[in-house]
Amino acid sequence: MAQEETPLEPDLPIVDPHLHNWHVLPAPGSLMQPHRFLFDEMQEMVAASGHNVTHTVFVECHAMHRADGPEEMRPVGETEFANGIAAMCASGNYGPLRACHRIVSTANLLLGAAVKPVIEAHAQAAGERFRGIRMATAWSAEGLFGFPPDPAMQGLMTRPAYHEAAGVLSDMGYSLDVWCLHTQLEELMGLADAQPDLEIVLDHIGTPESEGSWKGREAEAREQWSGLIREVAKRPNVNIKLGGLGMSMSNPIGTESRDASSEVLEEEWRPYMETCIEAFGPDRCMFESNFPPDRDSGTYGATWNAFKRIASGCSAEEKTALFSGTAARVYRF
Image (cartoon, rainbow, N blue to C red; front, side):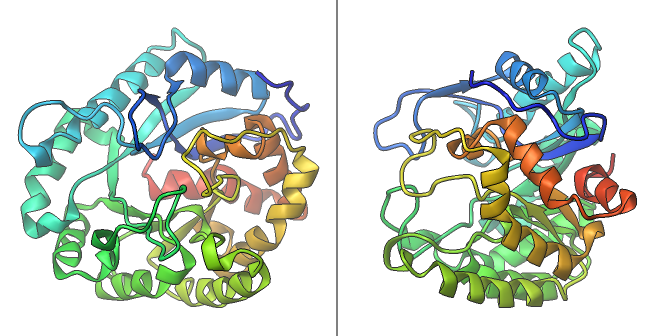
């Protein structure tokens, strides 16, 4: 493990609203390199950072899906897995961290209204810890993680079945996490308008495009992204996660690793984070680690130090919202 930085504001409570746990096994052609990040690895990482991370939210990552049973029900295995980690932490036997305190699972939202039994199964598996769904929606004409674009993924958020399933989530009182790229943000706005009572969480700031023909056009991408983000923020049912910029999308997840300082990360990320905070306000923003994928850029401790540097000019109330309050509200702690 890399040497960690001394934590800034070490007593500031942090809810990490976007952490993955997994054991990725070798699989030819996978988007992810083999990697183990289970309970022990997570505990060691958080403790080494020195930051006061009190709770985490588990976000789906295709971990531990059931090998058998109806295809649509297999993702419930991931909820069972995350709930097991939560139960270990809740015992108090492993320290104060309450990992997987809330769980964002996955389901095939293209089932439309027929997704309801799947949502009910997730809720039965994790009780109040289950808070919502995320389905893979990120799509780029340039491809992602070194793989060509999948035509079947294009325009998922515009499909009637997806909207119907989103309505089911809304009616049941659950939230929807969405990761999409900036070229898909108009689709997200259409969804938010169609489902005004649905709590939507935009992951990874609505990632600006950077691959393929976008290489060397960072300023143009950021300008487009900035305008779209300000439009998304006009939808009061959308919240945003500030993170995900440390993840490389050039190669399969887990291929790269560097140890940039928090000062370097702050410089790289500040323009994006400040745009989001200005547009959404601190009460609808939450810093996220997106670990392990964001390990591509820096350590867990350096990542949170970078966020604290970015928020250094905020009031105490604003910091509370950014580092814990918004996440606790959205995921109903």
